[in-house]
Image 1 (cartoon, helix red, strand yellow):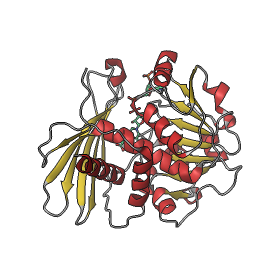
Image 2: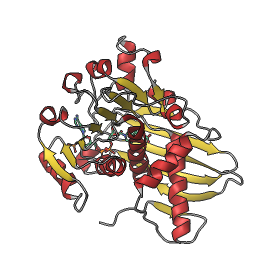
Image 3: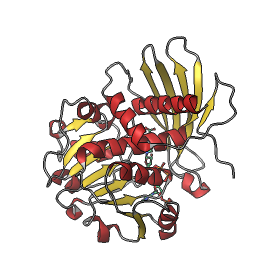
Length: 325
Ligand SMILES: NC(=O)C1=CN([C@@H]2O[C@H](COP(=O)(O)OP(=O)(O)OC[C@H]3O[C@@H](n4cnc5c(N)ncnc54)[C@H](OP(=O)(O)O)[C@@H]3O)[C@@H](O)[C@H]2O)C=CC1
Ligand SMILES: O=C([O-])C1=[NH+]CCC1
């Protein structure tokens, strides 16, 4: 099968463009983006809607962002949680990248690729503030479209030599490992989260699980927890004990306080108070707040995604296209 192009240029007559992502560069661009006050991001639309052929609702997200005088864009993305049974990623959609001055469309990007790359890079950006600098092992929980990208992004910023992958089936975990050959780390598929989780430095979790897969009782001093999955108020990937043991950080207060059960459930049951949340990526990137402050601290980062990330990544891929043309 032919994979879809990452970017279809509209104002440039060039057939198809598929980009290899340099995660280090994209992470740096995101860091600059989060520290750029001119970028405006209205609260995104987050609509759950019935999906009669399935037993689960789907979600539609509309995500605009503007950098006045420079560029703008909007992502239309759906999450169809049963897509796995059709061998499709849950995330589908498109990104329209615009010139902010005259409003013309500069490019249309495949939102599946854009989202996996910017989400993985956002997690790694957070890790650059929150994980220990000497982190050498990573546990990846989940085997979907994000898993491989998260492994690439996390290993690009820390000296990781050992990666472990857990999935609901060992075959899918092994397939992720098999796709990561010639890397500077080993990759091992595992069958039990509990057996490995206490022994790694960074845990990244990107699943559609409605209930916790990570339990605070398993977490050890100095670990960093990167929670990417739960995108609705009734979904969570980690339990209350994980919150109690950790310093909690968000991608943004705007979405992070409202959209995911990993934050909303502990806020509602009193386990977490808003004032306990240490910082979001705006505050970390502009230097207003600190990330990890001790080797022993357990850091808990929850992302739900933000349109600034899409705009910065679209700009990154567009400029890469222009310079390689
Ligand atoms: N924070 C952010 O910015 C973003 C978050 N996301 C979210 O991240 C998550 C992963 O995305 P992506 O990799 O693209 O999705 P995919 O659809 O490609 O993969 C989903 C993964 O979740 C696993 N899974 C599904 N149900 C469960 C369950 N009950 N318990 C454990 N594992 C389960 C699947 O396993 P199996 O193959 O066995 O079904 C698969 O490994 C999604 O929830 C998505 O909405 C996505 C984009 C941005
Ligand atoms: O930001 C994003 O694109 C998404 N967040 C959750 C699902 C998709």
